Each structure stands twice: as C-alpha cells, then as structure tokens.
Image (cartoon, rainbow, N blue to C red; front, side, top):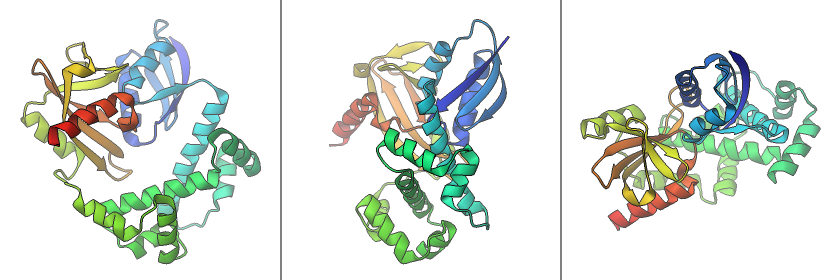
Length: 283
C-alpha cells in the first residue's frame, strides 16, 4: 500500500465528501483523512492518480496538481467556511483576519495572489458567494428578508437589497417573483429519486468524456443516442445534500436512468447539448 494525497477542485459540500469516499473505496483505497478539497488515503500500488482523476471527473470533480491552483481552491473553501461561520457563530469575526488565520498567510499576500489568478478581488468573490447564500435562503422561504440580513450579518435590509441588485442585476422582489414562476414538483432530491425509480428510471449515469456512461451496464452512450426528459435543481441546506441537479435520461434503445450532478456541470458542453434537446421537446 502507498500513501496518496489528493487536492480536489469543486469539492464543496457534504455530498461531495460522500461521493469521493465511496468512489475511492470502490477503487480499493482506504481513506484516512477527508475534508473539503483534500484527501489522504492508503492505496494499492496499481491505483494511480490518473485512474482516480478519471473516476472523479464523472462527478465534475477535478484533481489539482499545480500549487497556484491548490492555493486558489484553499482560499475559496475558506470563504465558504467563513460564510458558514457567520450563520453558526455569535462571535464577530473579521473576514480578512479569518482568511489570514485559516490559511496561515498575510491577508495582503492572499488578496494579491487571488486577484492576479482569478481576475477579481477576494472581497468581490466573497460578496458574490454571500449573495448566492441570500438566494438559497430566499428559496427555502423559511426566513423573511430582515431575518436573512441578521443571519448573514448585513448591517441593514437596505444594504442587503442594494448589494443583491448590484450583483444579480435584479431586485430581491423580482428574484422572488422569478422563483414563484418556477415549477417545483419535489420537496427534495431524495423524494425525486424515489419517484423516478418507481417510474422505471432504474439505472445510474455518469459523465465520461463526451458521453454518458451507464455504470451498471458498463456501457457508454454518445450524445445522439440520449434524451434528457426532465431536470430538477435542489438547493438543500448545508447539513443535508448541498446543491444538486437531477437529470432523467432516456436512450434510443429504451434504457432509462438518472444522472445526479453535485457540481456545476450545467455549463458543460455535453449538458448544453442535452439541454437543447430538452428545450426542443417542450417548444
């Protein structure tokens, strides 16, 4: 057995941790340490990083080797942790102090390298993520806007609203109206999966290069042999399944199954092509 350390991009929620652990174990590895963005494991000599990278890529997860990329991912995960701390702790923590402490480097150093690498300041990245969290809380519809402002430590509802419009280009009220116009069929991902299984979507798909692979049958399907019949997106709490997208897939030969996306693969070229097919179906 050999020890392997992995740095993984897009590993942003508890679902990601579960998926990575399960996939590594299926490859014969023993995971000794796992957290967002990083894994330490003991693996057979035959298990290479290329094999692992190929397996994880089907979930939109990317292995990082470049030191600068690893550093950027560490910063982004710290921003996420800071947002979670805002909600869970009554203690006031300054953003710059938190990043400097968690990363172990001077904040000016962090900020300079982030801006150079990402093209935006780390403060802007934080603001964008904070607004994303506002969107999530609005979708849950459990808190009013004043309560959301308090939860995310905004100084006022007015400040939250103005920042929201500056980032998204629309007001909070317009965003809520857009949500009301969306069709919502399932309360959560688990309910949707159970319903689709009952309807005969019994197989599991994963992205593999420019195809979708049915892992149960070890068969890959090109884009022309696939149809995406329905898509559902879920924004569950950070203590549940995080953000997930469920695609119901049908093949030309009648195979029906599900693809569960825990990343942002909706912008992937493959999924753009599938989405075009879906749009044509309902146009």
